[in-house]
Length: 389
Image (cartoon, rainbow, N blue to C red; front, side, top):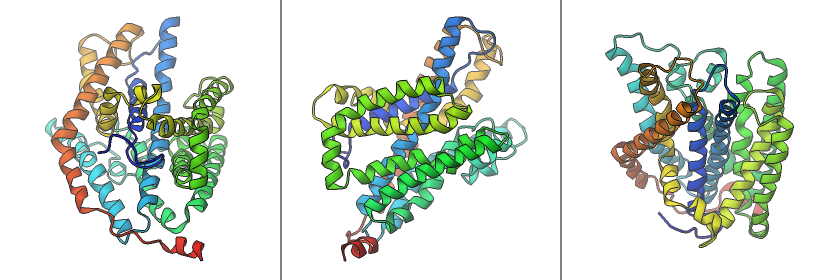
């Protein structure tokens, strides 16, 4: 794996590993939050900070849209374009996902002589994001809804990239972002469950598509030059939008009419701007952003982020909650901020450790199979030839 990118927008950019690490750390803080009940002012402040970690999923979506679309654009003229993409996704995503699902939803319940969890068919088919808002959830794997959103995107997006020239792809991506906002407005105003606007793919595809639009822009010579020129300003723009958005939406809540409509869109733009900052200033040989986002510790966490995400909720259910109960912490949580912080820290460290073990024991062996899914000779796809004519 390269240490520095070949050019802005392509190759390995270490700063993106740092962004991925921040995303997973935010998610861990949110899902390991055990503060509950009547809280003191300091505890309430901490609870609000931990709860805000849900935005890490939005950052993951933007990053996924960028990275997946970038790879598709770079290989869209390959004769084995579809086989390469789906083969590489399969060996990267499926092994760990289905091993953990098999153990947690089948083997463990059988070993404990318990009934198998209801509704797990939605997990096996990557459709849980459509089922959970209706109450069809498996407590051990509530976080798999976001993986379902991404898999549904992966299933459709290669065909869109193949058919559309890059500039039209950017326009289509931005248009789909508007569709997602309209869908959220519709569900917020007509549905009795706010989880629909939170989990339905049509409501969350704007983050994936915005990342896709950035991938298309940085592969266009004209826009690439603009990205290089103004990339540094993206950070200041993101900061300004974050401040204004936090004030307007009252802290970017996960569930609220304004938060789920304007808030989600603003977060998408903010993280898109941070992505632009990372792929420009973060790609430099030297500089403060490269030093921060390219730090080895963050890079390692980013490298194992998929496994960390997979494992953290089962760890919380099977180990964390029983241990807390044994220590006298109620099933509904604690009001002590120090206890809550200690739990977030220790559970996060354990999740990272599981991610490390998972990668080296299981994942890396399947990743070696990627050598069988290498793009063939690249020729312009039909859409490109038609545009040139």
